[in-house]
Image (cartoon, rainbow, N blue to C red; front, side):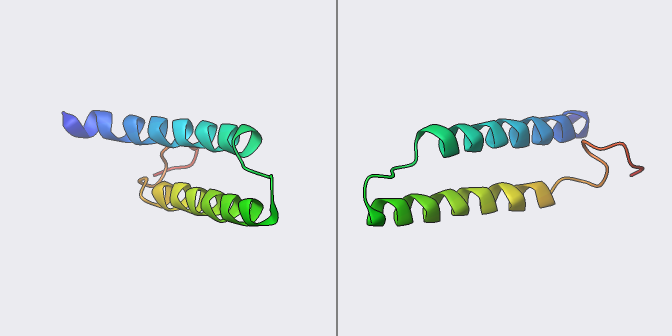
Length: 68
């Protein structure tokens, strides 16, 4: 029973994280000084990398039309 909700919940989590990263990239990066730009971009890239890694744990075929 629990496995039935696991894959959709994982996909929903990835979608919400992707929306957050778009918002973060467009509105919250600190671009006031060279140090601030460097620090903001490093943290943003770490968050993008984390989303990429989270996507790797999805079972095959979740969220795509392919066969699993």
